[in-house]
Image 1 (cartoon, rainbow, N blue to C red):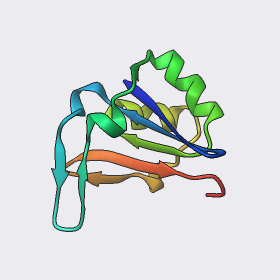
Image 2 (cartoon, rainbow, N blue to C red):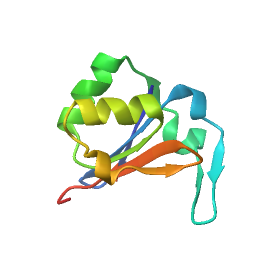
Image 3 (cartoon, rainbow, N blue to C red):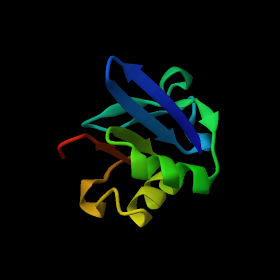
Image 4 (cartoon, helix red, strand yellow):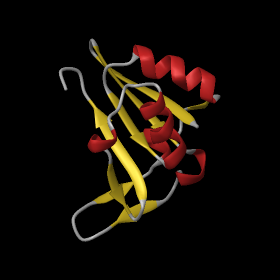
Length: 97
Protein backbone atom coordinates (compact mmCIF):
# COMPACT_ATOMS: atom_id res chain seq x y z
CA UNK A 1 0.00 0.00 0.00
CA UNK A 2 1.03 3.58 -0.59
CA UNK A 3 0.57 6.26 2.05
CA UNK A 4 0.96 9.97 1.40
CA UNK A 5 0.50 12.80 3.88
CA UNK A 6 -0.95 16.09 2.65
CA UNK A 7 -0.30 18.82 5.20
CA UNK A 8 -1.92 22.24 4.99
CA UNK A 9 -1.64 24.40 8.05
CA UNK A 10 -2.71 22.39 11.07
CA UNK A 11 -4.70 19.83 9.02
CA UNK A 12 -3.35 16.62 7.57
CA UNK A 13 -5.10 14.39 5.06
CA UNK A 14 -3.71 10.88 4.73
CA UNK A 15 -4.13 9.25 1.31
CA UNK A 16 -3.97 5.44 1.36
CA UNK A 17 -4.07 3.42 -1.85
CA UNK A 18 -3.53 -0.13 -3.05
CA UNK A 19 -0.29 -0.02 -5.03
CA UNK A 20 -1.78 -1.59 -8.18
CA UNK A 21 -4.25 1.29 -8.63
CA UNK A 22 -1.75 4.13 -9.13
CA UNK A 23 -2.25 5.82 -12.50
CA UNK A 24 -5.74 4.42 -13.10
CA UNK A 25 -8.95 6.35 -13.66
CA UNK A 26 -12.19 4.91 -12.32
CA UNK A 27 -15.38 6.26 -13.83
CA UNK A 28 -19.04 5.38 -13.80
CA UNK A 29 -22.22 7.34 -14.54
CA UNK A 30 -22.09 9.29 -11.27
CA UNK A 31 -18.43 9.77 -10.39
CA UNK A 32 -14.84 9.76 -11.59
CA UNK A 33 -11.66 9.35 -9.57
CA UNK A 34 -8.17 9.73 -10.99
CA UNK A 35 -5.74 7.80 -8.83
CA UNK A 36 -2.77 10.05 -9.46
CA UNK A 37 0.80 9.65 -8.28
CA UNK A 38 0.67 13.25 -7.10
CA UNK A 39 -2.09 12.57 -4.59
CA UNK A 40 -1.73 8.89 -3.68
CA UNK A 41 1.81 7.71 -4.35
CA UNK A 42 3.74 8.37 -1.20
CA UNK A 43 5.81 5.80 0.65
CA UNK A 44 5.22 2.06 0.38
CA UNK A 45 4.08 0.79 3.75
CA UNK A 46 3.42 -2.63 5.21
CA UNK A 47 -0.04 -3.59 6.46
CA UNK A 48 1.22 -3.25 10.03
CA UNK A 49 2.54 0.28 9.38
CA UNK A 50 -0.71 1.32 7.70
CA UNK A 51 -2.71 -0.08 10.64
CA UNK A 52 -0.84 2.27 13.01
CA UNK A 53 -1.38 5.25 10.69
CA UNK A 54 -5.10 4.47 10.46
CA UNK A 55 -5.41 4.51 14.25
CA UNK A 56 -3.71 7.91 14.51
CA UNK A 57 -5.15 9.77 11.51
CA UNK A 58 -8.35 11.83 11.61
CA UNK A 59 -8.70 12.78 7.92
CA UNK A 60 -8.23 9.86 5.53
CA UNK A 61 -8.88 9.22 1.84
CA UNK A 62 -8.72 5.47 1.11
CA UNK A 63 -9.04 3.54 -2.14
CA UNK A 64 -8.57 -0.13 -3.00
CA UNK A 65 -9.74 -3.50 -1.73
CA UNK A 66 -6.78 -4.17 0.58
CA UNK A 67 -6.68 -0.65 1.99
CA UNK A 68 -10.42 -0.52 2.66
CA UNK A 69 -10.44 -4.02 4.21
CA UNK A 70 -7.67 -2.98 6.59
CA UNK A 71 -9.51 0.21 7.62
CA UNK A 72 -12.63 -1.84 8.37
CA UNK A 73 -10.59 -4.43 10.28
CA UNK A 74 -8.98 -1.66 12.36
CA UNK A 75 -12.41 -0.29 13.25
CA UNK A 76 -11.89 3.16 11.74
CA UNK A 77 -14.33 2.65 8.86
CA UNK A 78 -17.86 1.24 8.68
CA UNK A 79 -18.77 -0.91 5.69
CA UNK A 80 -21.78 1.36 5.11
CA UNK A 81 -19.47 4.34 4.44
CA UNK A 82 -17.72 2.60 1.53
CA UNK A 83 -18.62 3.55 -2.03
CA UNK A 84 -17.62 1.59 -5.10
CA UNK A 85 -16.53 2.81 -8.50
CA UNK A 86 -16.07 0.05 -11.08
CA UNK A 87 -16.07 -2.47 -8.20
CA UNK A 88 -13.17 -0.68 -6.48
CA UNK A 89 -14.00 0.49 -2.94
CA UNK A 90 -13.34 4.07 -1.87
CA UNK A 91 -14.00 5.98 1.34
CA UNK A 92 -13.27 9.26 3.02
CA UNK A 93 -13.03 9.73 6.75
CA UNK A 94 -13.00 13.25 8.14
CA UNK A 95 -12.61 14.63 11.62
CA UNK A 96 -16.07 14.99 13.08
CA UNK A 97 -17.67 12.21 10.96
